[in-house]
Amino acid sequence: MSNSIKDIKRKIKSIRSTRQITKAMELVATSKMKKAVESAVNLRSYGYLAMNILLKLSKKYQHLHAYFQPRELKNVLVILFTTDKGLCGGLNTNVFKKFTQTISKIQQENPQTKLHFIASGKKGAEFIHRTGKEVKMAFPSYSNHPKFSDIFPISKVAVKGFEKGDYDKVIVIYPDFISTLLQKPVTKTLLPFSPDVFSEMMQELGSKFTKIAAPSEKDVDYKLEPSPEYIVTNIVPQLVEVQLFQAVLESAASEHSARMMAMQNATKAANDLLSDLVLTYNQARQASITAEIAEIAASMVVVS
Amino acid sequence: MAKQIQFKIVTPEKVLYDAMVEGVSFPTVEGEITVLAHHIPIISAVKPGELKIKIDGKEEFFSVTSGVVEVDGNSITLLTDAAERATEVDEKRAQEAITRAQSIMSEQRHDDEGYADAVAQMERAMSRIKIARKHRHGGSRPSFND
Image (cartoon, rainbow over all chains, first blue to last red; front, side, top):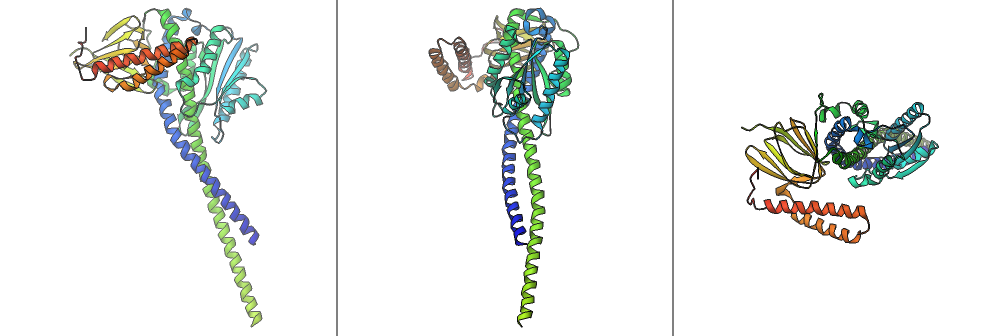
């Protein structure tokens, strides 16, 4: 009897300390989440309006820039955004599912296509390795205070590679932040940019996109200053970088909110478990006391 | 009452300004342009400098860095890396940025990209200082159409 009481006591102690950790992680994630969500949401207006300008340019000046011209898909670069650390619920698993779906779709449509992978986030790199593919480059996940300059190494590889013809298409896969309770993995084509890509993206992002940058129905004939060439070569790369940065911020916001929810659930589960165990412990303790008293009473009877 | 047009300044951090205005002037790579209501649709590259908003007969000044502006007849949208109200420009910080840029320029003489970055940074900081000085004491304000 006393053995099982000891066991229960040990269990209670270990669950208490686990609860302390999950509670602390929850608090940390909550404070990080607030910041990450704020910057992700703030960049949205910029990012979506930039998309809108890209769309308008791509409709009219497709011939001017390689960024707007779809090519035959020989090499596709896939940039996968995940987290560095675990304990964030099903976030990474969902992104991996999307990843697998996306690449099997590309391979079905173009069996000749060669795929290249860049991972931002340790978990993504590990996953790509596990599936027997080669990770061309692995970056950390920029989930703590992402800066615009953080994405330069990735964007350089992607944009320069596309310009040189190393890649014919660049896609990004990242968990899009919808709310603290919901993160949806999305696939977005970064390059080349075309009206088809835009409508595809509208479908993925849905109403939160149209709220900020509803595409105008009528085609406006824009004058480009100083020249269409100048705008396209100087502005477009920057707008593409913003799209990439948006992906980083959305993943950061998703990571912290997913972790917060996961830790909240873990803390709650620990609480449930604890109250069960404390009840069992008290029952066991009481039973042993009762047994002891009964023994003493019995021995008293014998002695007298 | 003059005709008004919707004007938005959007930076990666936030939507800094969103209101109906009478007119906006900003520096582009080809010189300053002023946009009033019913301006023809235009997309243009914006250069670091001073942006002037005319609203209710008054003028407001902003310091902007490079970006892109889109005018579609009913609205003006300015996407820029950074912008701030002229009265809120921190001159000391801008001065520090210049010193930093100078040291980078002397160190990275052989790194084309680093050098170009530093030059761009310096240009931005200098334009911010110029704007800050101009508006520091609510000094003489040039008229809208000068």
